[in-house]
Length: 89
Image (tube, rainbow, N blue to C red; front, side, top):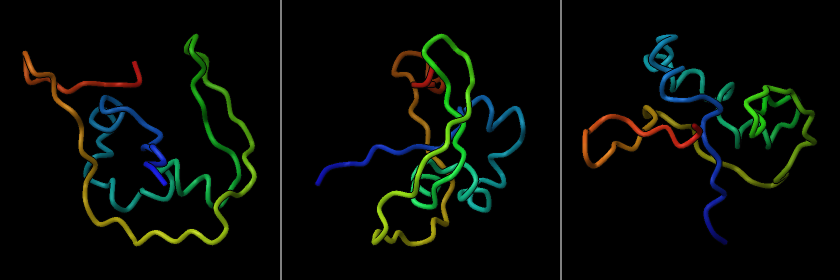
């Protein structure tokens, strides 16, 4: 099995602008796409045209368990200017 490739349902800019970065470990169940998929329910999704929609997802991975995350999210930096890269844009 490979990487499930789930991410936070947020961008670096949103985390910094809304000052959520300080509370990221406490908000992981609200922002983590894997947690949302496991429990099912409404999940905001950005379409390629930039439109934000909300979809209902049925619960997935019924026997999967992941330990609680106690660390802050990491972000990739550009090699040239050391600014953060936002893969979602």
